[in-house]
Image 1 (cartoon, rainbow, N blue to C red):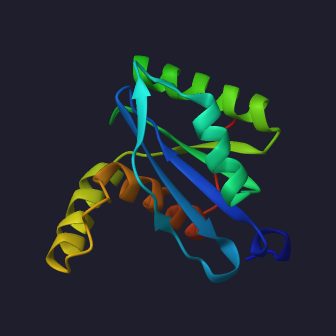
Image 2 (image 1 turned 30 degrees about the horizontal axis):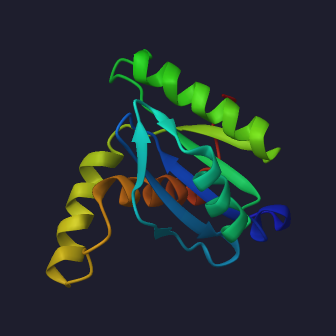
Length: 147
C-alpha cells in the first residue's frame, strides 16, 4: 500500500432510500468497522446529523457504493447515489469515490449471520456490513469512479 494511503481514515456509505449503511476504516491497519444504520428520508439524509458523524470520525476519504446492474448499466438508484456522493464531497471537501457495490449485499448478509451467531449483531445491519466490505475491497484494489 502506498504510504499516502496508509494514513487514511476511510468512511464508506451503502446508500439507500430508507436507510444507509456506514462503516469506518483505518488504512494503516486495513481495518473496517460497521457503524449503526443511518436513517434516510426518500434518499435524503439529515445532513446535520451526518456531518456530526463525519466530524466525530474525521475521515480523509469517502467511498460511496455505486449500485450497478449486473450488465454494468446504471439505474435510478445509481443516479441518486451519485447525487449523494457529489453533495457529500461538496459539503465536506473530502475526496469521494464511487465503488462498485455489486454482490456486497449478499456477502454482507452472510457476514451478518456470522455476527448473529456470535451475538454481536444487535445494532449492526447488513447495509453497514456492506459499507465495511466496500472498504475492504478498496484495500485490495483502490479503484473507483468520480461521482
